[in-house]
Amino acid sequence: MTIGIWILGNQLWLQQAALATCKQQKEQTPIILIESHFYSQQRLYHYQKLVLVWSAMRHFAEELQANQWPVTYEIADDFETPLNHWIKSNKITEVRVMTPTDRPFSLLIKNLQLACPITFVPNNHFLWSSQEFKEWTNSRKRLLMEDFYREGRKRFNILMKDKKPVGGQWNFDKYNRKPPKQKLKTPPVLWFEPDQITQTVIDEIKQKKLPGHGSLEPFRWGVTRGNGLAVLDHFINHCLDNFGPYQDAMITGEKTLWHSLISPYLNLGLLTPIEVIKAVEKAYHDKSLPLNSIEGLIRQVLGWREYMHGIYHYQDDDYAQNNWFYHTEPLPQFYWDSSKTNMNCLSQVLQQVEETGYGHHIQRLMVLSNFALIFGVNPSEIENWFHCAFIDAYDWVMVTNVIGMGQFADGGILASKPYASSANYINKMSDYCSNCVYNHRKRTGENACPFNFLYWNFLFRHQQQLKSLGRMNLVLSHLSRMEEQELNEIQNLAEEWRKKVRS
Ligand SMILES: Cc1cc2nc3c(=O)[nH]c(=O)nc-3n(C[C@H](O)[C@H](O)[C@H](O)COP(=O)(O)OP(=O)(O)OC[C@H]3O[C@@H](n4cnc5c(N)ncnc54)[C@H](O)[C@@H]3O)c2cc1C
Ligand code: SF4
Image 1: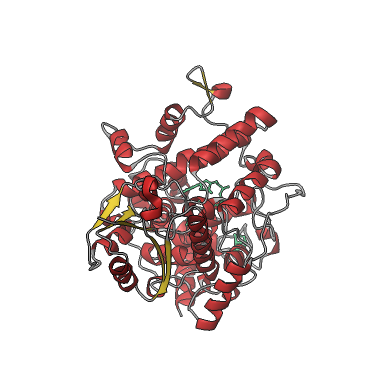
Image 2: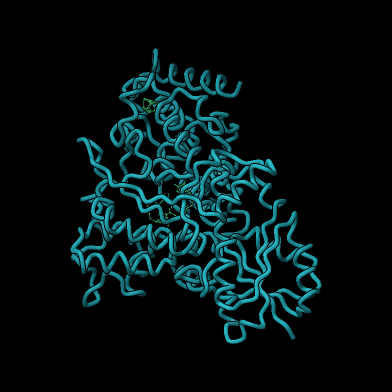
């Protein structure tokens, strides 16, 4: 009997569950990694993501070889052909693969016609297994992230003292979310020059003229576990102190601010969530960094990231098809080409995403997703776009963040109210409005900001549904006090604008 292990492109660490099952007989366990060009062309993925994943896979294959695992590396159209060839030539009787984090990929594997059986090994990419998350949900009326996060703090003993939260509170957000008022000095970013493996991937994409989105070069993301650890270290030493206060701020030309940039590495397995959490907790004790920043970052990784993954597997397969507001507008073309919009906030963020495949949380939520929501874009269209445009996008994190959090298409499973806002929020949290052809104060008339009339039009169109949420009552009371003439003007402007964008 010969067991072979198939390693997927986002399962790149030596302790992953499938490798762990055979580590005692590693020299006799054939390993395969496959770059499938057919699979990579199912969406118009960002070029930076293609380079990141393929280069990280090639580097990981070298790491496996250095650790005495016999590795086969294939570049092919499909998965089936190289898998069957590898099974036959190594006389493999069972293929093992760690269960993918993404449900569509599990289905793809189940449908492969292979020359021997394939076994799924439970995934150990997250701190909470899907089964543990399900047990946590038992007997809960609402699946609140806050409750889940506190449970995680206790379960993994993070920032706890004598069974109580360090600092006497679970949350220090009142010290965070500062607008970027004064001129801020931002920290340097740790980028990497492409090595030979990365440059080869870039050259192959060019030679084969593979389709994709955004810029292929310059490519400056890390591609190894060593690079991921260096990014984490850089974040702790240069950015963590101000991460909390400015995590929601947006500044023209500042692509990363005090954010960690660790999601591409976490999502590929080059970094593990527990090592990130422990390193940040250690910085609190060793470097006396501010607790509001420390707790803020730990909340993102131990709270939001684990929660999103838990919810993704807890929901039914058709969760991604939800469309609570029945939105049907096609995605505006400018999402694919930033030069086609004159709205400064969108143009700035879209251009940055085209160049790097990265935007921080508030750029994603309150600019890109917020606009799609109030414009009325079909949730699956905006979800597909996010999946194509971002370096760290995978089904588990896309469906929850875009369909659930960003578009409120699940009607409130994941968030208690829609993340919809007018220009007010963008003007408060960024400097984008001061350099825009639109007037952020105007909701009607010449140069009125589209975020304003589309926001009020969104509230008007969906007021019956929104009333049922309770938390929207205050803002709906402003709507009911609006003069009829202004309301009519808003409806007309919104409709004209939609027509113009569609054409
Ligand atoms: C519409 C939308 C789309 C998003 N798409 C993605 C995506 O494709 N891939 C992705 O990993 N995250 C996504 N997020 C979550 C979050 O915006 C990114 O994880 C974060 O911006 C990545 O940058 P960073 O590493 O600098 O994060 P930081 O701001 O430094 O945060 C640290 C880490 O916390 C984790 N985290 C924080 N919030 C979330 C969250 N809501 N879901 C999952 N992890 C979280 C990430 O691992 C992140 O690296 C999305 C959020 C929204 C609202
Ligand atoms: S005025 Fe409106 S469109 Fe212009 S940057 Fe501000 S929010 Fe964006």
